[in-house]
Amino acid sequence: MTRKDLFASVAAAALTLFATNTALAQEALVIGTDVDAGTLDPRLARDTTAYRTINLIYAGLVHLTPTLEAVPDLAESWESPDPKTVVFKLREGLVFSDGSPLTAEDVVYTFTTITDPDFNAPQRALYTPIESVEAVDDLTVRFNLSTPYAPLLSYLDMGIVPSDYAEAGGDLALEPVGAGPMVLESWKRGSEIVLKASDSYWAGAPSTKAVDIRIVGDNSARAQAFEAGDLDVIQAPLSPNDIKRLAEDERFGAAIMAGLGVTYLNFNTADPMLNDPAMRQAFAMLVDQETIVNDIYQGVDEVANSVILPSSWAYDPDIKQPTFDLNGAVAKFNELGWSDSDGDGFLDKDGQTLAITLSTHSEDPNRVQSVEFLQAMMQQAGVDASVKISDWPSFSTGYVQQGQHQIALLGWLNIVDPDRMTYAQFTTGGSLNWGGYSNPEVDALLEAARTSLDQGERADAYQKAAAIIAEELPYYVISYQGYQMFFDKDKLGEIEANPRGTFRGLIGMPSAE
Image (cartoon, rainbow, N blue to C red; front, side, top):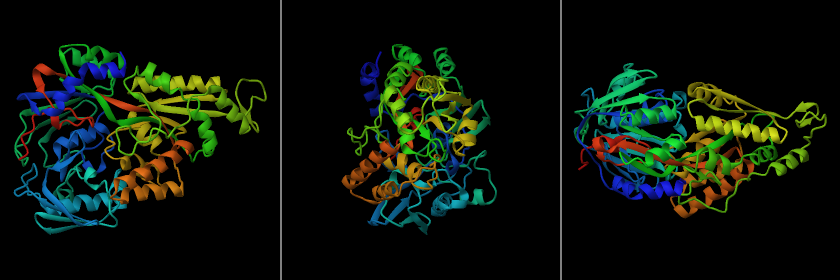
């Protein structure tokens, strides 16, 4: 079954999911996920389980709907008296789960710490245009921007943290205090996170009384646990065979749609073997996207051509990365001085063998298989390619984020605006620029794209930047990810699926009036 067929088979159900938010009242909901959360402090979150759990424990000024519209959450309204000022009015009577009042000072504290370079927030680049945040009064917050900033609202679902608790030494990472619809009950690291409904959320308690988030690292084991009834909900990442089987099983509800993520190769441009764009182009020509996407992932994703999602208003189908060409890659290596001078089957230059290490994490078997396939293609071209597989924490924070990799296979999710996929990743010194890429023209284009309030101007700047990136290749985007979720429809009824993978649409949220 192709991705198109899968989508068609559940299209009507998906439309129903988006149209409703009427999960049945239930005592507990058990959700299976692939990795444990690294932290429950929203300002420091780096992984999807953390983001999704935090979205239940905390609340932001706004909430993003499945169509990425920013709607009121803690803020009941906002206005922009000029392009560099946004003023938010908080709801009256807001409290944190410990009973303490939530005021404008907590909003100021949250964003002041995030934008402080010494705090080292992973997503700080999303908030650097915020020059200052002021508490006008207890219910009014003014954001003063250094420049107009188009994506701002898309990033203001950041959970607000209690300033008094944090400044008194409270451990938000392990003992979070938020103002969201759920509170932390217990956390067994590497095993499960248990939440219970909060009676302090401004809109009232959700109908679901408890959420048990269980960590099952192996995708197929997670699907089997779901089929056995041990889990009520599972979602991407899932193995293609499991997606096909579960989509055809009438016992389960399903949502299959285009996601907000990419799977990509991160080239370490600071590595001597990869600092020449021409070398990265040659390696990119050894990436057989069609086989990876349609055979390994069995069509649940879509072959990519640039760093801009097809669902984005900034997408341009005419931007093209290099495509698979084994002979062309060898010819390009030859042009760059690499040849099999000693007849051992590997290319060499000045006595050095053309060797490269491909890496990914062990929790996703499709990524492991993809890396092994890439290794085989590179070896056919005369590259002495090796593979390094490690667990997610070691791979992500201990390896890639330290710039120790050469070519790493990983992904980005939650791409709610083109800025989120580009600015921190590709600007010189960007907080997520783990490959050390630097191009002043790209810097200027991405700065212009986030500061213009004209969507046409933004699209033009993103397209120009994407075209340069597709040529210089700090990233090679293999696929645009699909999003899949399966759930026990007898237990949950009709729910609100979200391509970001967030959980609020699963717990019977009270009406926000």
